[in-house]
Structures are given as C-alpha cells and as structure tokens.
Length: 358
Ligand SMILES: Cc1cc2nc3c(=O)[nH]c(=O)nc-3n(C[C@H](O)[C@H](O)[C@H](O)COP(=O)(O)O)c2cc1C
Image (cartoon, rainbow, N blue to C red):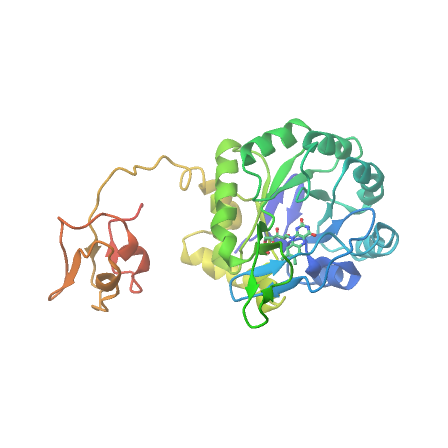
C-alpha cells in the first residue's frame, strides 16, 4: 500500500508527523522522530529567547490534553548551534521548523534556521496584530515554503488565510490548541494548571476538521497540514478526505505514549483498504468528488433495517422522537420520525440505513 505524499517538491513516506510541542523539544526528542516511522519531523516552536513556562503545565484525561505551555524553553542559540545541525547531519526525512512570534524575532531567526528547514511552520497563537507584516518579514528571509498555523480562537479564519497568502505564505497548518479554557481540580479545590489553559486531543477533532474543510473549500489548491485530535489511522484518512495534505499529532501521544505514531502508520494500509482506498494520494484526489460534492440535504428519509439487526434495542432507547418500537422487527412510526439520523449513526450492528447522507 502506497502511503507516500508528494508536496511542494518534497517526498513524504507517509502523511503523519509530530505536532509542535514538548514531544519535539530538544535533540533527543527530534532524534526519536528522525528514527521512527513518521513521514517528517517537526521542531518545537523556536523564538529568540527560551520561554519561561509556569509549571505544572500539562494535564490529561482519556480524550483531552490541557496545557499552558508557551514556545521552546531552550534558547535559540542551542537550536541553531547544536540541535538543528546534529539533526541535519543525521537527517532521514523532511524537517519542518516551527518558529515564533514577532517581526523582529523572524528577522533574526529565519536566516539562521533556514539551512536546516525544508519548510517553516509559524505559530500565531499569541499574535494579535501585524499578521501580514510578520509573514512578509519571514518571506524576505527565506524561499522555503511558509505554513502559517491557525489557532481556533481566530473567528475570521478565512480572512486569516487570505491575509497570510496575500503576504507571501505558502500554506496553512490547522489547528493549534483550543481555548482559552479553565478546568477545576475538584479533589484539590483549585484550578487545574492555571487560570487560563488550552485544550487539544480527540475532543477538538471536529473543530480541526471544520477549519480544514472550509479552508479547502475556499482554496482548492493550497497546501494544508491538518492537526487537532488525531489518534488513530482512520482519523488520518478523515483529515485528508476533509482537505489536508499532511497531518500531525501530539495529544494522543501524550495520552497513550509515543509508540502511537508507529502504530498509526502500521495501521494505515488496513484502514485504507477497509474504506476502499488504494493509496493516500487517492484519498487526496478523490475528495473533490466526494466530501466536496454538492449534497442534497432536503430529503426526509426514514430509517430502514437490514438483516444485521439483532434487536439490541439501542435505537429504540435513544430515538429522540420516540418513533421506534420493537415488535417482531423494529417498526418506524412515520408520523413521529424526525429523520435526524441518530439511530443510524449509533447502531452497533450497522443495521440501519437510509437516513444519513450517502
Ligand atoms: C503541551 C502542548 C504544547 C504545545 N506547544 C506548541 C508549540 O510550541 N507551538 C505550536 O505551534 N503548537 C503547540 N501546541 C499545539 C499542538 O502543536 C497542536 O496544534 C494541538 O495540540 C492540536 O493537535 P493534537 O490534538 O494532536 O495535540 C502544543 C500543544 C500541547 C498540548
């Protein structure tokens, strides 16, 4: 099964890389991703000065990571003089360097980072103004592809995309962590981590897919790197179908461990086959005629049941309209059915059809 992706003249063995975060901070971490199965490597966001991060700064549940990290805690000198030259020497795959945050940082950093980067990824998480000026200051200092990273708290995200592309950016990474939010540690009767935290992991996946889908719809041809909530091989395919060319993951590896990257890549061929794809490139090509085709949403279809129904009654219990009853088979009350689709989406046997979009 061909998992490779060709993008901007670069060859990626597969579409999955790490997302900027603690997992790619420093030499040992970057060496891990240089040597594992990921299709490319990413460096934690580098700024001129190392960040001073309040600790503790990361907490997790089974579906969400909370954090109040900033950018790399290492000084840029350490990246430029030690870490990146070593990775460059040992390099087995394309390297994306994440950098931040202001014009003066980029004028200093980009020329020094440029020899080690195949592409740049620019965090805008703490940027409130001068987006175009920031992109121009980077473009003046490199010919490499520049991906601007969208944070989900940006309301006018299509305006963001237009501004950065007009100023010279190449593509978009979507999305950074969601927030700000607050979590309460009930046992300790205090806020968890800090008064203001950011959320990531599987619980934010629909928000990431929303931004990716809508950016792809508005810009059919720009490169998009999708990130936010990926945790399994099927997620990678969903992100690419929604419009991503490459994908990244962080939080699921913080929840389950970093061996998850190799597991997802090993699981990808079977997942592609299960859904009828013969390669990742095919998923990229097919999205125009599939998820982006015009959909007829105005048809009121009733649920139908196939032979897989084992009368488990879940649909009867969950129907919000009380339209399903169990007789010899499940019977639909056509007066009551509101054509919502919940029964079909929840059926564990895949026994209901006809309501959801095809
Ligand atoms: C602990 C932590 C630190 C992060 N640090 C950075 C960072 O330095 N730069 C950046 O652009 N994004 C950073 N992110 C955001 C991630 O790169 C990613 O966009 C986000 O977590 C969504 O992906 P995920 O759900 O796979 O984690 C961080 C996220 C977490 C959880």
